[in-house]
Image (cartoon, rainbow, N blue to C red; front, side):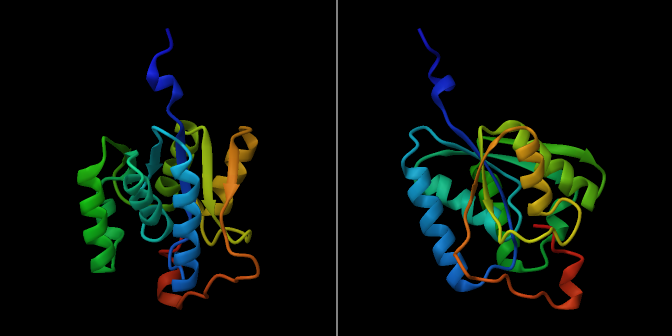
Length: 177
């Protein structure tokens, strides 16, 4: 007899923050349509603003379960946008499992470790990625590269011909996905 948990598809996410409205609409539709085809899906996310939170909402919308890997203590402080912080808090309460990494404070090293932990925990990685290099250690490109090194199936979700928005200088240090 096969344990039903063996049939659960574990999907991880790595993706950009600061998505344009047209990209949000495209990504949401693509993620939902892909997840809807996977009964018993478990989504794994760090709930970063942008793609991570979109993914988490899509997982829950299709009836899946959500596991969260929090990169560090005080990770919540990285959310400068109040709506994103509220969404983080809300999604965290809906998670079936929350794991907080041992980093004492948010850092690129913690973000990279969380991204790798997501890849290590999933069967397939969804990457909301424009194909460009990471804007900081632990960015989407770094996580995609790590997933490929492990031979993890990776599904890139990005609208053809669309360039990611440039960030204001003040936000560049916060961008990691």
